[in-house]
Length: 599
Image 1 (cartoon, rainbow, N blue to C red):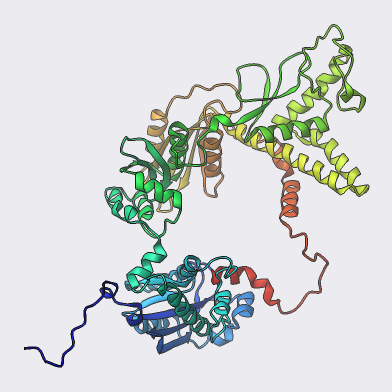
Image 2 (cartoon, helix red, strand yellow):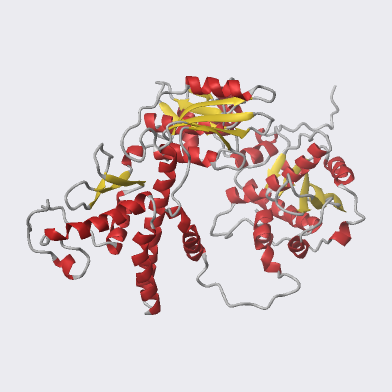
C-alpha cells in the first residue's frame, strides 16, 4: 500500500515536457579570426552552464587558431598573437568544451556563427558533432520583441534592454555571461504567453504551422541532385518553381524553421505534390526554372513571370528615322535597343538620347522631296534638326542617325560626349542639380548599350560549346545556340570528355533564330548563360565564330559607372576630409565585423 503521508500531484498538461526551469543550458560565445568558418579559426571559447537561473559552471580558454590574427580583429577583441601563442589548439580546446556542454541545450547569440565554427572544427578533427538542441537568442529576440522596444537585436542592445549584469566586450566569457542574462529575460517574457517547455520554445522560434509540418513527406522521394522543383496543388497547377543544387535538402526547408516567409507557408499549405526535374548542373537548372516560370506563371513566384512585358527602344526605318518605344521586335530593317525593364526606363533612355542628339521627336510622316510643315518649337531651342521644313538636310540627319545606331552596337563615346561636355559646363557653373540629372542620363544610356552589346556578343554565335570544372575532378558542359541553352551535360572524373561533347552537340536542340538582338531566348536566360561563361575556370571548347565585344563598346565606360555607383552609395554626411594616418587603427574600422558577429 502507498505510504499514508505520500502526496500525489496531478501533472498539468504544460508540464508533460521538461519545463524550462529544469532545462540545463550551455550558453557559448566564440571569438574568431574572421567571419568565415571554412577559412578562419577560433581564438577563444567562453561558456556558462545554467539551470533554473543558477550558474552551474563556467568554461573559458584561449585557442591557438593556427594562423595570424588580423590587426583589426585584435583591436576589436583585444586578443593578440602573443596571447594565443601558448594556448591549446582546436584539437584540445574543442573536445574539452564539448565535454563541458554534454547533455545540455546549446545557446548562442547568432547561433549559426558560433555553431558553424564548432561544427567546422569537429569536421577538421574527424569528430562527430554531438546532437545538441540549439537555441538562438537573436532569433528569440526578433520573435519576442518589437521595433519600438529595441532598435535592433545586437547583443549589446539586448544586454542594455534587459539590464544585464555583464556588458558584452567581444571577449568570449563576458559575452556568454551577457547572453545568459538576455536568455533569462527572454524566457521570462515568453512565459507570459504560455511558452513553458523546451519544445514550446523551439516551436515558438520556428513559427512553422502544423500544416507545413504534416507535409514533410513531400520531400522524401526527392533526389540529392541539382535541378528544378515544382510545387503543385490538387489540380496539378504549378504554385511555385524553384531551383537548387540539392533538391531534397532545399525542399525540406519549406517544412522546417528555416522557412519563415508567410507567402511560402501559405503555398505549402496548398501544395499536394512536388515534381522534381533533375539537371546536369546548376546552369541547366537555372535556365529550366526561367522557362518554367515564364510558361506557367506560378502565383507564388514573383520574378521572371512576365518576360513579354519587356520594352524596346526602336530606331525606325523611314526617311527620317525617330526613336519609338515598342513592345516587340519585328522582322524589319529598324534598329532596336533593349530589352528594357519598363516603359519608364525606355522613355528615360529615349530622353537621354534626345538630349545628346537632335533627332526629331514628332510622329509625322516626312518626305525626302518636299517640306511637310513649319518647324516646331523644338527646332527653335536646338533640340531638333527640323527635317520637316528642310528635306535637303537628309545627309546631315543621316549622320545623326548613324551615330545613334553605331552607339547601340559599337562605339558609344560619340553619343555620350555631348552629354559629358554638358555635364562639365553645368558643374563649372555650380548648377549641381542639373548636372546630376545629366550624369544620371549618361549612366542610363551607357548601361542600356552595355547590356545589349554584351547580350548580342553571345546571341550572334550560331553554336558555342563551353566547359567548366565541377569541383570533383570532372567537367560541366553547355551547348549554346544563338544565346539559348540547347544541351547540358557532365563528365565525371575519369570519363573521356570528347565523347561526351560529341554526344551533346549531336543531341542539342535545333534553333531557328528570329529577328532582333534576342533571336532565340529570353534576355534573362542569355544573361544567366553569360554569368556562367564568365566565371573563373570556364573554357571555350568550340565556337562557330569568335565571342567578342566591341573594342570601344559601352562596357569600356565601366570606370565612369563605378564612380557613379560609388557616389550614389556614399553617405552625404560622412566627413571626407583627409585624416592623419594613425599607427594603430581605430576601433570603428572593424564595425562590419562587429555587425556580423553580433547578428
